Length: 520
Ligand code: MV4
Image 1 (cartoon, helix red, strand yellow):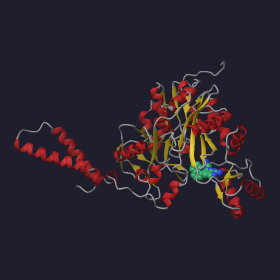
Image 2 (cartoon, rainbow, N blue to C red):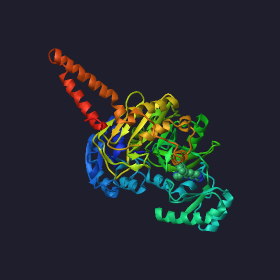
Image 3 (tube, protein in one colour):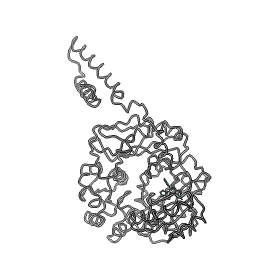
């Protein structure tokens, strides 16, 4: 095929992000022999990305607006330091078409889709219109903004209650309202419009059929600059708390080869309709009948991308770099099928038993799990300060095994190895979920976690790793035994050759005692 996509070798990338995703991108770059530069705000000056990067540049004070969201300053910096490309990660500037345009105008490769594709998918009403035209299944409903209450009432009757009111400019559930019957429409319509105006500066709303207790299943796609888009399969993301994903898996236990192919084809059609390139994700609602509906497309690399990497063997960050350079997708992207099962949990600095209250502070002690099938994508290390300025996600723990049952057992094992002290984390919630029969059986829907939390169905699980005293018992026993042995040896003979070891055991024992708080 004769096309004219310029190949532009990327030798240095500026990462316009922080935390675990900045680290993840650095790792991808370093394995390709590409230099990675990072920006950092004042509280992030000692962050893990700064420690691992080839270059680190200060970008401003803590507030994102004055640091990680300074699009023009970031593009100027990229030009100044001779970076060929910018990787935006997720959040911050990643889905701002204006930023992608600034990059383009400055001759910097934006590692992501074109500004036109970001724009097309950015407006929910506009993307819905495009998807309908392209033959992608969307939730039944009117595709046009509703000018007044009469229009809303007529539309609701046509669709049939229950219906869902959504903000045209919205996303993430803001300004969204379920309306069970006609009597509730007037108040909800008015409330939704003013909420939409306040949140998005645009009060247009539209109506859809309300899908009851669906799953949230999303398809990872990858497109190159030569017009080829492929599906890399689904992720099951139904376990959410207030629109915040908590656990993600690949594959979904309810998606078989036929549904996977059909959802993949729909996602590819959606992406192709906007001329999509690079990594992207099509979100679908999957109902009890196995019908699926396109919700929106996330035009970025997502937090949960590792579960897809583990079941496909494809490094998504490296694929992003390659396609941004103008490389066509290679044969490894032909008919990708999942192998085994991967599960990711997001570790937040929040107390799950105190209504997820933020728990900032210094990580006094940290021991990551390891061993077969365990991956940790972390943005922190022992001694890190967790500030209140940014998303409180510390790390992602991802496991892979041959099947779901084994993956969950492995996750349980890994969580038991994990120790975090100094701050509270969501680890106990995952332990509780692993003990929950509905989660274990894979019987999930988007409301399940909120329902279980509200009903108090998830309880703290008694586990050695929850209690410093219990977790330290083997260590304490070992210290005592060694101490005893050392005393006997010094009493009966020459100094033991293990003197240096003895002092380290002593240090470990004292540290354990300080942590436990019950020894002095
Ligand atoms: C829906 C829905 C049910 N029916 N639309 C929430 C965020 C936004 N992206 C779309 N959302 C939903 N739209 C209809 N017609 C239920 C949700 C929804 C949801 C969707 C995906 C993941 C989690 C969710 C949690 C609550 C509600």
